[in-house]
Image (cartoon, rainbow, N blue to C red):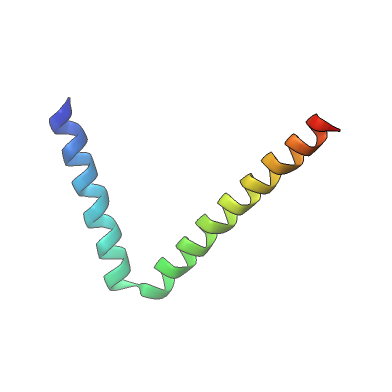
Length: 54
């Protein structure tokens, strides 16, 4: 099981590096989308906590 996790991790790392090298603009778009998603999720948690306290 541990070997499978290591192999999966290496595959993901190779895929990320391949994407960055072959298409840097697409990789930048994906990173931006990821950060927007994280920001939206954090904003939602903040609004939930505010409503919970009020």
